[in-house]
Length: 112
Image (cartoon, rainbow, N blue to C red; front, side, top):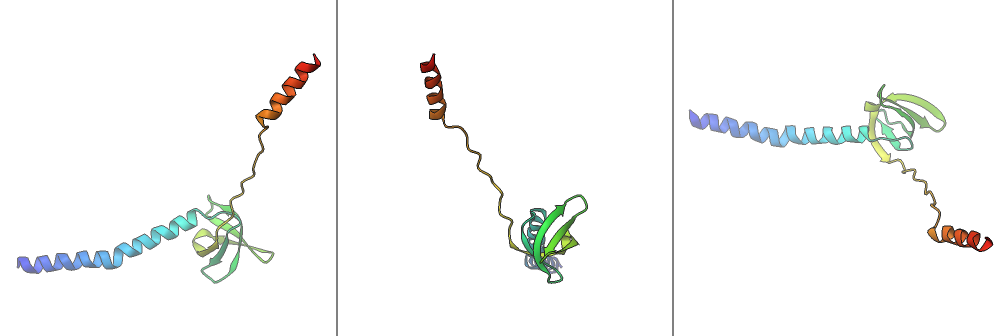
């Protein structure tokens, strides 16, 4: 009797590690992809439509897809694949160089 219970427990554990756990990992990865999507990313929808994301509305869980000039609104869950992630828009702000500031100070002192 105890041998049958042990076999049943081993079978259930094997099913968990073979079927359920990989499916949960894939679902978690997909949810992270959807949560991190930004305007400018190129995506493919579950219907096979290719386009670039124009805007994302996190509250309504929708996004605007620009497909060659045609703007369509989809649910975020309609994203099947992110083909190309959005490029980070980082603008370099040039800070004044300390040497230039010192040169201006010495020039004003010479004028006095």
